[in-house]
Length: 488
Image (cartoon, rainbow, N blue to C red; front, top):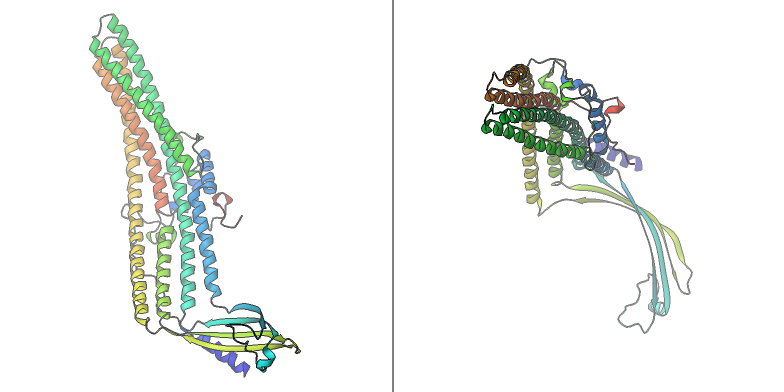
């Protein structure tokens, strides 16, 4: 009989269904090529970040951020939390075992007021008067809910998807952190370059003021000419002070990304010495769906929402639970020999289900279905946003390169013009306005070129981020590994 019971239970479990729809990936817009670049098998995102960003000091900063950044530590803690929740959900599939123990003691007298006699089987009322009664028991029980409608399995499915969501969130934080540190570092090096340019311009203006003052004392130029050169020098000094302020603030921003208090940042290669790959292949559009962590994260959120539909539907049906207990007990009465210990055994099956609240549970199913529709819309939006970010980065890479090349030619021409104008002015063959105009234009052009150099470097980093490049769990190099998610 016992064997037939186990066989029936096994068949019951095998035939148990899962309520709710099974997840299938929805149709997504991919396309065969990029708008501004041909699709290639190779992708810039295949490069590890330390091969793309070759500045040794920048690599040290990124490694420090991957170990110390607080946002990354929050992401790691979230993974640990959801991993534990998945284990909790899995334990609902197996029987739960508990125990219970107790001891009772009663003293009964004839004169007790307001207390009825203790109900002791097979003992007369006269025997109960003035007696002591004690009872001890210990039991262990097993309870097992049969997952007839797949409520527990759908809960596990949702918990697993939520764990994968947090793991992808960690990867997104890592990729964003690598990119943010690189961009902040390039911003800092661009500010350093602008400070150098401004210092050179300030020294040039000071030389112009000195020469103009001598010419004014000799009566060669007017006071108005001298005042204009002094005004340009003062403007350059004010701009230098502002740039030096931005340098310190940018160092503070980098320190925050590194998980440190504000402090000076070590420099490596100059902005003009930074190397970037001459070609930036974007890869295949379809590869973006598996590479971008925010897209994978949005899909896992959709998977979890889809599983909650089955959980909500299963709550509307009866739940079957099997319970079994086993234990020992004994009691003793004053003046009588003790009874026990003796064994106690029991088994039961219970069915519980909704009745008056069935309508409310039906609305709960509608809530889960609406949440799934929302998650689907978010998933599709993430895909469209990803394609937009890649296309934006592609055009930025292309046009900043063209702008840099044009501005380099402009700076070279203005530097040559400034040299000629200075020689003519010092020889008295040119007007001060010629020198003033050329020098101001050269100064502005050099600053603009520095900003464009920075924009070109940042555009490559942004394309790298948009393609989902950076660190991935499959990376074998220890250099790429962030702070560990295992307990310390």
